[in-house]
Length: 369
Length: 63
Image 1 (cartoon, one colour):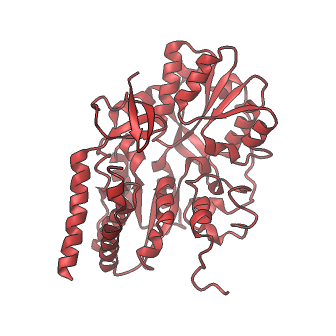
Image 2: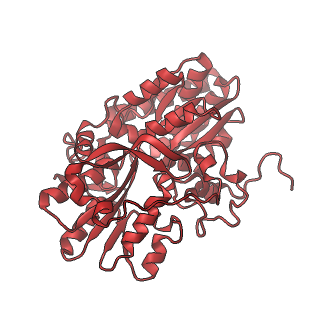
Image 3: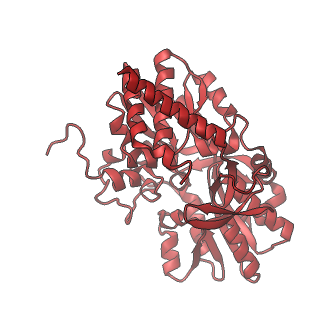
């Protein structure tokens, strides 16, 4: 397909790899934020290609992975109510809550449905006026304009049986948290191309200036990511810390203003709990008071539910780039995509699931046979 | 709301075009959960690709 195949050209990829290897004179640690980029990097073995001096660590940009345990528990409570139609992106169904998951609720007779778009949930609400329809709105800035539009449209139509369980999170506060940590090893970031398509990259310019760390806004195809790595390496080698935009075909500095206007009309910034990471100030969205009638937490009285995080896996460290999935003692044995112990093993965007799918047979360097 | 038909390789779907008011028939868009979030800038896409190609050619010429 146009604009995809060109960015998967193996001959060009090899030339980019050669250029990266030639540009590197010392070790660098780079992080990609977005789970979609993690998937491409692991799928195409880009980390192995670019050589041992560049270490790629995987960031917290998998929405399914960072959705707080208490939100999953709230979803489970709501989905278990008779008559409710609970609509979710498919990945969320297998994410373990404290005691169950949405798949088990579905298996026990709950009406849990998978949707591709929040507009599918809106359609279900119109078709089933007697039944409450709840959409599970998780995601980063990329998904927020779509989810906002579903609520905005529901209000315009006066749909009283539609509500949304909102758990939106934002990328820049998570980066700030990583960079403030004394354990941080990341020296350069590939900024998430689709988040920046919506938000632009002015926020990242502030981060680059404050922390003296370079950012390259990157796309999602192998050549995009290789070029982003090359641009980052050049900045690091030259001692620069700027924001460069590799994904120009989709991202402008100011982002998509129409999308942002819609989401700010519906959402407001709020503190959020991140699974595996903990609370981060001003790191998410909730519905504005004008849209309170569409807030499923209020409608179903589940606001007070909280859940302590079990120390069952090392996902907290994986999501902060401090450990690799293969460092986990239960990786690929007790924890697999069909029996996930932690959220990063569930989603295709999760680092653990990507490693399981593409790298579980790889032998770690220095491993004993 | 404004909707359009988008072809993803072989699959055809409706996508909301509220956020790409400039999109015209025949344009390429990036669609996320049923919403077009950007119109692919054809000139930039080709420019990036040309840059990559040129870099490759230079690299080959250079050794």
